[in-house]
Image 1 (cartoon, rainbow, N blue to C red):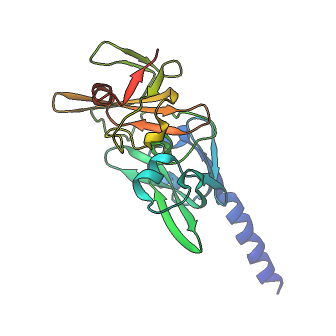
Image 2: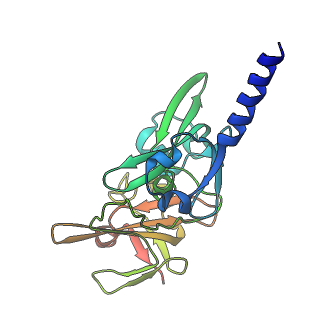
Image 3: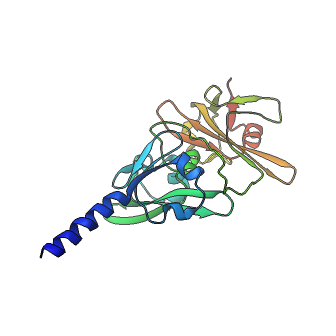
Length: 238
């Protein structure tokens, strides 16, 4: 009996020792995914300082709600429980921290998976209580033709964008939906602050993706800033 009790105590101690919080910088600078294989990850501190914990709740953002969920009365208020936090490895982006969620629509439990918490915040798939995320290249990140988390950028028309300073207005439109903004057209007239910039290139074309945040915390993603300006979907206020 005493032997069994000792085994149980040692097992509990081992579990507690392996139950850890990991951080963005820790993952970004890790040598290998093997560093996390034996960990029981209980929480993750993102690059913006926000902590996500197993058993906690996240709010699904308007970008996710608009693109994935159908026939939901109030998609902006959807929340999901964090079931698991894990470290994955992508050939394109290196080590990324993801999370498995459980969403309830009525009585129906719906499993969700975000392979990158950082990208989910940037894209507006989940709502951050803190703000924009940043990106730091790790040693195991394969170089790609992209700049993620830039602090400023100049558009092809000469307009200079500065994260945290530039304000962008979502313009009114007679169309039922925007082409480059996955958000409701009722947001026309809303002015939001620029919180993140991502620049990618396809051939010779440069695509500037913007992440905006309204005064009430709603995250809006502009998938192509130049095209959205040309179509009159957004206007750079300052």
